[in-house]
Image 1 (cartoon, rainbow, N blue to C red):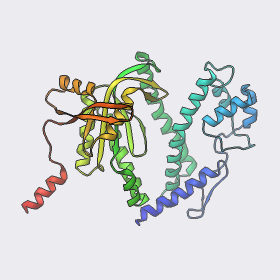
Image 2 (cartoon, one colour):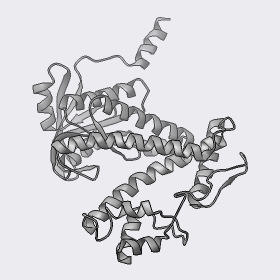
Image 3 (cartoon, helix red, strand yellow):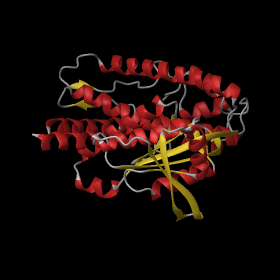
Image 4 (cartoon, rainbow, N blue to C red):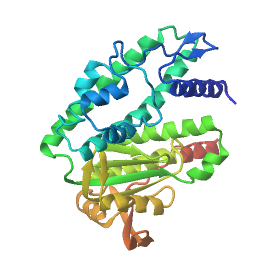
Length: 353
């Protein structure tokens, strides 16, 4: 196993210790450094969890539901970990002074908790890798502060963009757009055949390229689902280009074998996620597609015939019998001009020699 794999495994072990010892210092015997000096959250904590709940005037059973929605069910500590600023901020969203209903409070807490938990998990591994690197000399507290600053910078940028969009199209309303799924073919068997560090590299490359292609064509990644990525894009033509571009990367062996499903229609946007029939259809098309193909629904196929010009070759396939749809009309989409993949070019050059 390569050395970088050993360092990653060591970093994960340290990251696990970080998660288990929420506010306690963690000594790394390799680097002989303190990874997380207490206090972790606030320099001037004033409230325990129970004191915070009392100050918010929230019934204990409601506080437990919100606390669990944030993802803190397993963390119980009698220490003072909340500041006055925390209390003032939480009053906007939690308790009788909040403008949100209890249902909305719990939904907001769940959305924040799910997204930040995953982000923090990745960041803990990155910080642990830095700690294990003898060439990294910056105090880890400074590195964490820098990471928090960058995170806030990017978040504010995304927030500004989404606020402008929501002025034109409010949240929790229907939007006419294209929903897409792309997933790795044979992921389950593949994950059994390769080492964990190879699996990590494969998933990282898959997600990185998918995000780059989707964003490059005006789309938005909604979420990653292990071996799949779900996205939306307003333009039917750009949606097809996303699918064919991703397949070109797979043809060049930059990505593993993939399949893509696209469907257009009205969706409900809620708390950063999307719902509706196009989501279901795109998922069914993706699951039914052969490796190396892009399947689209009937509405998107018509859009591409009318607006795509001569950029695509669109071919109908026999109706699909999938969960929820007995005869789902589907169409295969590929570039009008076939391209020769990098591996085929290399094969031709080898034959010439």
